[in-house]
Image 1: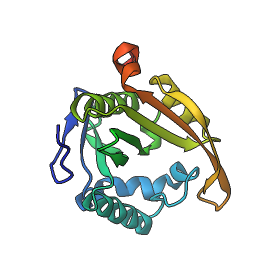
Image 2: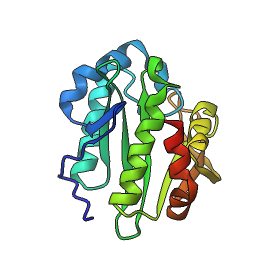
Image 3: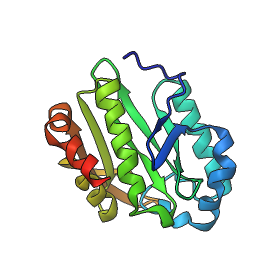
Image 4: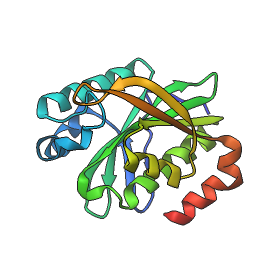
Length: 197
């Protein structure tokens, strides 16, 4: 498959729909920026206010325009509303690698079936449509919820990037790096994740 950044890819199952993030999603996501700014405390530059949500969307759309990232809005079919965002980033088509990240959901939707369903759709698309060899993930090493979520979908921890970035308060953070490679996806990770959703 020749991945086209201009194509409108929609990934969905009976639980969620991932559609390309656009500025039109501002009104659907603003409630989280206003009411739940703590969602982004582990990382800098989160959309933790209306102004920062606009900057966040602008940056995501520019990254897609520059063929560096492909952001999605996450729609929960049960509640019939947009509940967060995720994206492919660090996309290296020639090297057949990418990362999944910038993932966040409203607090009510964390720890539900949303994340595993999103990851299943994203990983299936990455390995089976885009023919990727490696899909990576990163998180603030202090974010146990995020690390546990990644390990629960089959990610293997690779190491720590020390003093890698800052959190929302300007503190230096270590980032944990995890991944799933193609052979792992086909030899069990896919089936294990499918059984969990």
